[in-house]
Length: 310
Image 1: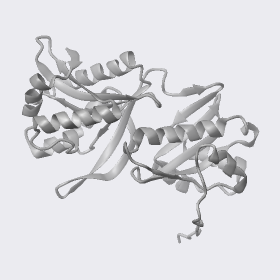
Image 2 (image 1 turned 135 degrees about the vertical axis):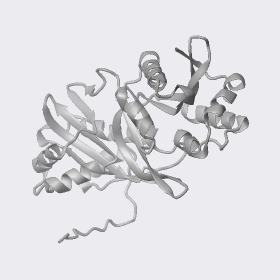
Image 3 (image 1 turned 180 degrees about the vertical axis):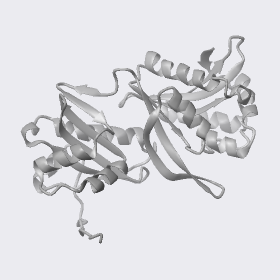
Image 4 (image 1 turned 90 degrees about the vertical axis):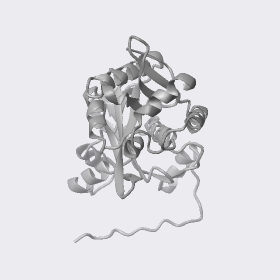
């Protein structure tokens, strides 16, 4: 089996024949294409995705040149993370390892040819065979957005999954090691106590971290020295929270490193061609630091209440 670029004139009819019902269509593409698929719309969507995001469509063929699989791939250069979309194989070959082979070839292409550090994809967890296929070759969950897509009366979650190239599970920044989405409640509370008093309870912290959009942690060897996290709705607004650097490690560029990581996540995951509110709260002496990234205060006053839960 091998990969080659998708050719609209010869490949579209084959792929269209695989989409046999409306539910399967929604599971496959989230209704990005019309149902049933039409050549003109298919071409238009692929062209627009290529123009905006750099997606390229590919097919997998058997040894006789027959098309048996399809996907789109793009690489986000600022994060060096690849994205797979619209993964589908010939229904007659499902359950025979064809999907795994397609994914392995796609991931090899991403790592070996485009030199990506990681590859991500999105899947609806109700598509259990697809989730199991992705997990079988090493994809793991990054986050799940509850009720992100509606199909008739159903509300489907959307899960982002990722596989990392060997040796790319962490990023070396000089003598620091940066990790994504590995910050745990114990580390959070330890860092909190290094700067402020009265860390949240372990239960509060674990719940907050599990519902964060993105977490960054920085290590000096095995010792955690800094953290930052982001919450938000993924569409209109992100909010940066809990940016903490141990006092003895401050003024060494670690804060900038973490903000750069958070903003890179937004560039990768935000809706292309739109503006997204990114907000935070800063003490007066920290405002010049955030101003370097383009943050500016407005006339609104921040209101808050510590609401008791009995």
